Image (cartoon, rainbow, N blue to C red):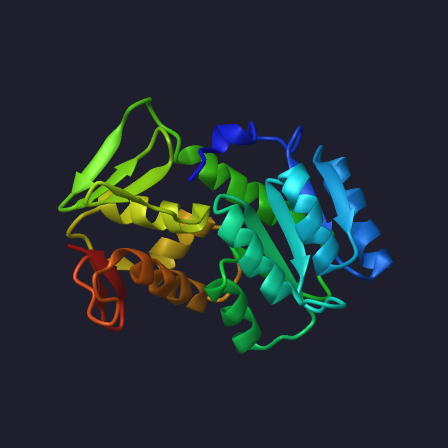
Amino acid sequence: MVGYAKWGVHMSGEGIKVLVVEDESSIRKFITINLKRDGFQVLEAESGEEALEMMKTCKARIIVLDVMLPGIDGFEVCQKIRETEPDAIIVMLTARNQDMDKIMGLELGADDYMVKPFNPLELVARIRTILRRSEKNKVELGETITLKSYCVDLKSQKFFKNGLEVELTPREFSIITTFMKNPGRALSRDELLNIVWGKNYFGDIKTVDVHIRRLREKIEDNSSEPQFIKTVWGYGYICQ
């Protein structure tokens, strides 16, 4: 897993590459205009195949990815990007207001989603919120948090289990860091949403459950019987 310094993250959009993957040119251009106004460096792709080819060289920090694409769809593109770029931020766009589409995108590694039609200014705001959350995780050099067989290295933004690195997405890393900073404390879904996604996030609270499930699959010995991140029924989760 590569640290965020790879992309030179700043609090503004300046210098940060965004790849917009959208086959409808009018929507793609509208998104691009608003991102550029905020200082982002924007690249465009009209298909999933083109996006994957571009990612080999451009190494975009952020990918704005439409679900419905000609050829391979956005879900497959998301999965392939996540396999090679675990630290990239992926925001999926969908015209379907269906929970299963949102859940599938999150299960495959998306950090956020927006349902069309949407305000492009909100898209920019959500991207900036994710970047701020990433920046907050970077604290004093060399600081680590260790709990049982797990360790979070806040300098390199890496997570270890039994001394072996486990690759996490930025959102998953933020979640596990929050838990390990609050051992033995039950955190409600709303509280996790506010801490990890930000108080201005207006997405579905089910997002928390989806990310916890994916995180458990990566770090628990048996994700169906978790021993580290446990469910507090009717409330949220606790790290023990």
